[in-house]
Length: 386
Image (tube, rainbow, N blue to C red):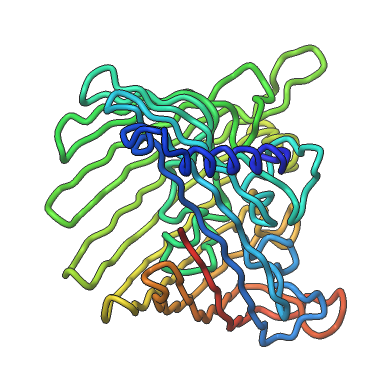
């Protein structure tokens, strides 16, 4: 997801010229859509940590809003779609900024390097519908797992949950979705290993989703992925390294103003997971969590979203932990307001979040000392979408 800036500039220039060309047909213009957003934030940490970040001892306690006491740039998104007819369409979703790298950590770093100057391919895929109810997709696409997404304008909270942070973020491969009715759809696909541009062994992952609408206003998604994640050894064979994740995501519109949601996930890993988890080859280690969401729209220009989450990594198999052998349980409570301005283009999101670990995990004012079990951050995000 790190590509040359000049490519995007050329694309934008060509789009601008195309839109201003009086000889271009109206029908051809309608085939293209162009959208995106830019976001920036400022969060203060009441612990006043010497590290000047919100990441805790593991360095992974927050997904994107990582810095404290400084203005931060989140993401710059440029999304282009082309839909010549109902049979097919293509999506090119490009991103700049620090979160572009964080959301695509497993991809190959390009000549621009990492950090806020990088350009990332967040998504690049096409859809083909040979028949009305069947959609075939190929390329790099966002994961079906979880409640939250990378795109800041879509989430009710600005800071992201630990369930989101533990991924996966994206897949590269092929998938097919069949809509049996307007209330039942099934998706299945074959992909490379988790969050990576290229597969690290010859085995492939299997993804799936069952989407249901039991009653009007209630959406239910049953998601899963099973994959071999071990790096192949020098002989070309693959040692044990399995990864499996089951996920339930659901929302219910109680009234036209009040929505409740839930995300629950349970994962298991064995052996050498991408050569980095210090596990033996026979014992399965598990993790899981539950997040509850509410959002109430008081009026068209203001809503209030709340999230409460518990993430259990007692087995220390995921990155949110004290060490490779000592895990923890993290609770988080987040309250976020959303004010809408500039004819719906500007989102102003004040937010307060408290993270609560069952062990000393957060940095105090002393450098190198992680002696606190809780941290509270207060701040605001500004998001402009177009």
